[in-house]
Image (cartoon, rainbow, N blue to C red):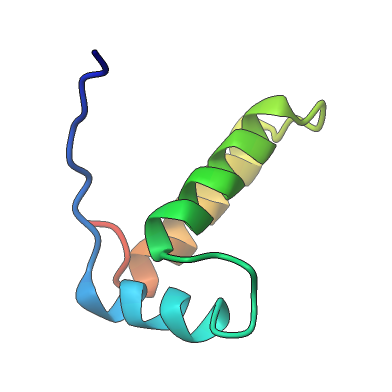
Length: 66
């Protein structure tokens, strides 16, 4: 039996994702997020430490991270 955990996302972010996937073949935000994470994990493209910091900074500025 699989075990699960919960990831909290801001309601505004979830609303943005719902709007983004409205015409896409994903049944839920959960399906979309899983798709994106798996795709990134399987990708050979790596981001550097500086790029990761810039992304985190932008996400904080947008209110998606604290």
